Length: 213
Image 1 (tube, rainbow, N blue to C red):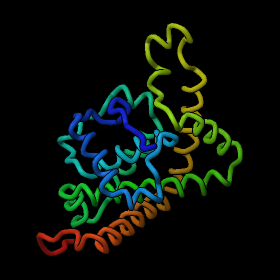
Image 2 (image 1 turned 135 degrees about the vertical axis):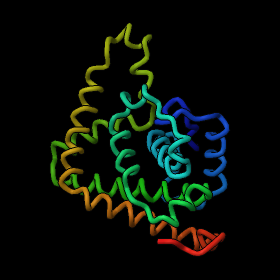
Image 3 (image 1 turned 90 degrees about the vertical axis):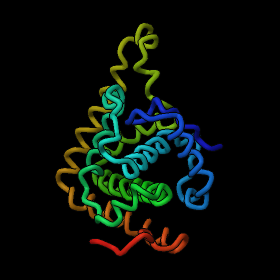
Image 4 (image 1 turned 60 degrees about the vertical axis):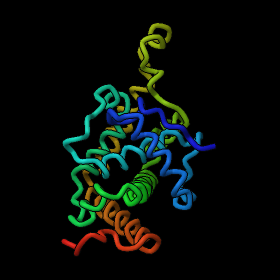
């Protein structure tokens, strides 16, 4: 079953119309989601891809961060910040702002490359991999209820989850610092592959003019 994303889980403050448009893209581009299904079992993955899509397709001046979620989802914020600072070729960057479908496909491929990086690097450290896998146990649900005031009144502050996220974040920060070039190269590969696939299906990316590198 397709995941229905709650906009409250996103890293940006967004409108109902924007979320509805993203859900439409999932249906319209279902061929491209076969490699990465938007299912209820992978809810967090779907939200991450939405965040990447919104980041790529929206001007910085129009993006408003969700301050509460930067604390609830620190790992997602960390990688989004990396994507923000990644230098995309100018003609593709302009096209992403004009072309929601291209941004959607690129978001999927950026996510795939990011996961490839994480899996490869964690394979070299069993302890880090175990912590990351434990965090994956929450991938099918929102983390917001754990930080809700009603939940906290009963369970106290979710210290175990917060500690786990903090531990994994620190471990990933060390890995990214050491292998940042590899991660950025993978982002570039993801955008290149997504762009080629888009052009093979829909035609040239910036059909309004010549390319500017």
